[in-house]
Length: 443
Image (cartoon, rainbow, N blue to C red; front, side, top):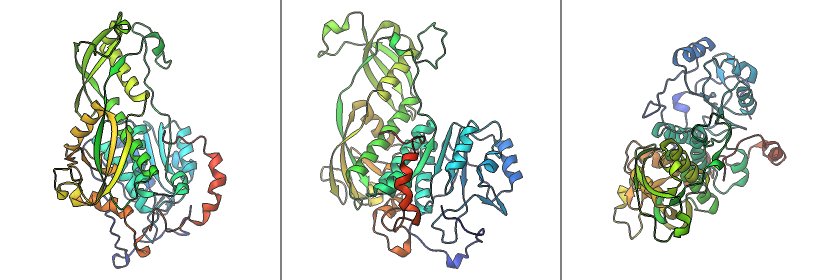
């Protein structure tokens, strides 16, 4: 990526551009406790690690003099962007997540991975300050809102990046976005009383549970009518919602069980030696759902085993959310009882009809009402079946619409991340074959 020949000095206030993009502040909120070091010395950075022992370290490169592109990791006169130099600065206890908001971060990321850090997020080439800010804010909105796994938080933020920052440009979508090093989480099930290590998946020892839940339609209003809702944007919306629901399930727990009558449409032959129960579950963000399921008594009446089976079945068995249809609209649809000002501060929207399990629809409607829950906003979801997303504010709208409207070239990014692909774009196709080791969001 392009780097400044010498560390740029501060840009005079009078010369700074005035983009319409409201850069969000890094502040402590919800589950996120922020401690900021600005241009620290190496000793200050090491001392902060010792004192805070952070689980998540975020590092931003210097802002180049045009304030539209982020440069190398330079603290004062010290350039710490050399992979070996930087990895030596990460001290035990090592963090779980490191996010590198610097250009050409791949070698640093590999060096950190070899040091044992579980999840490293990085940008492979140069990066726009606008796109980087959007991804970072999306990621931290998830961390702030839920007890989330790093993998799922990245998937949701990456889906938001795809949805808003790289519209209709497959090269940018594949190559210019953030990347993740680290393994997807798996749910392991060990038979009770068995002392074998949980690293071995032994779910075949028990019959799978059967969950009875119908699919329903859900109407969403998405902020940004001027973004053409093509298939790639809708795929990203699906990916983001699936990641969001996975986050809700991963930290879910059972609160009560009771016996239930098997559904009428189930063949009685299938129910020999099987019990049918109702299970109340509290998800990560405290929404409550009830599931009707069948399984062996050994599974259904062991709370820990049942919880793992439910999560494995719901998370790993299929994609939960699918787009059915799209209709563009400048405001809430005619069937919507709410005024346009109650949805995303009156911003333009388009309507998407999704199909998903009934329990998932209940979760999304609950989350829409929670003012402190911010993970719907990065996906542009402004209304869920007529319930406005209460955490949407005017700055959120301005950030999303910044990517959706045609910007004047003087104002920044034009149609997507850059006005045109940078000089190094000609080599992107050759590099694609080298990316097998990079974990990409699963479709």
